[in-house]
Length: 321
Length: 272
Image (cartoon, rainbow over all chains, first blue to last red; front, top):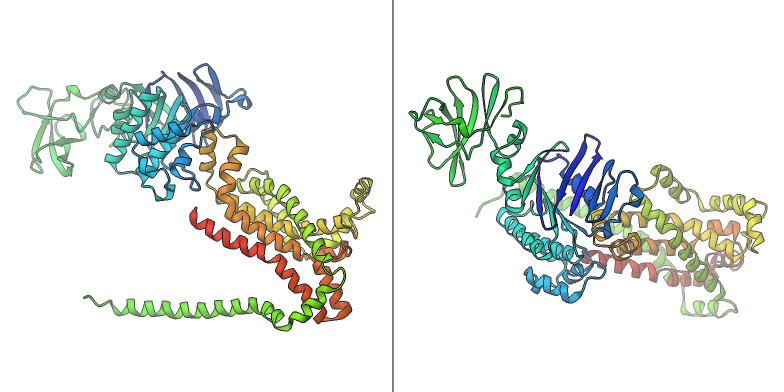
């Protein structure tokens, strides 16, 4: 059980986190670049000292701002950290890397390596591995330490998307087997949703919202959260603003009630199997929105959208375009 | 088949011409650097070497030099390694000040180092008095020879070792720490193996400097004779031809370790 309530001062802003992670639970922290995601993980792993608060793992207070000298040494925390750079030791073979943690049992290491599809690579040098293989080795190595918590700092972001997603699946399985909890930081909403039981939205060092991965997207608490979880449309009328998610902006017929908003198609860009359509609002509404549609409409044509499903925010909140 | 445009052609021939000039320059420097060694070998006959080395006590300066240099190397390794590591990781306050301290002996002429050492550890100084209480004198003793060698050679090791440590990715040390290693175990299992090629080069250069130390030695450790001092004294007393065999011995003893270390280091670098 991780119970963290702490702050770490950075040059530009203070990064804070107040969270409890149950044993075996997976939490994702989603935020743009520079939001302080890596700092959070480094604080939990013991790489940076706290400026306020403390971090508990099970019954141990592993970090405290009041008595940093008594912080648990990072090697004794049983907290793993996977980063984009797998950090394999280039002077050791794959098997020697996996057996690196003091007390690692070679028999167990070989078995874990085999489970991760690394059987033929045990005597290879890290320099000869592909990015995906290197990350598997790093994961295998971390699992030899009887982990209580695995921190993942966008470890697969430099790999191609299908491979990254596959490796997240491998991590999930490994965590289920070991019973360790995990904190993943990422800027990819889809990765956060695929991996985690809960998602926290981080912006400039502060958690804005935390909850079920789908709930956070469907019911963002603020316009800022909405903008961070993929809302790409902002329509203003009077003193409130509607946030529109491109995947939820399904067009309706013009005759389906008074509440519909009409917009004119001003841009069409292919987006995978769908097309991303940009519209400008007409009538009482001011602003633009995007919709992902199966069929490309005519440029300049008019589409209708029912706004009931869109979250509504006070107009005083900033509008992001 | 496409024909490359004229500009590309002329550019590539331009590169070839400049490469040629650079090669000639490099060859000249290489020959010039090896020249003294070739001249030494050309002026030595097997008979002169044998007769010089058959003289009674001919090998004593060699023994003195090797022993003093080994002790100097051990001292430098012991005291210089932590300093080099802290410098490389930027963990020292006022880092520029430390760097200046290390570079200063490198920039100071060895004769001047010898003079300054007299002022620092000579018999009439507080340090000299403290040393005399444990029966050490830093003037014309084996201890003084080791001291002079340490002062002449230490910057080569500290600067070389700092560069070697700086080339080790700190994230690898962090990874070792997260996997359960303490500072010392991380240093032993990750930092040193990865810095080893650079450390070997630094040690090799340091060994050669210690074996060849002369300027400071001349001032504070005229006795006991090490090889460089033996060469100097023989040259003064008996002339060039008598000194040359000792020069050969110095080269034969001082060079294999550095050359071997350089070869191993470049091989090891390729594997990392």
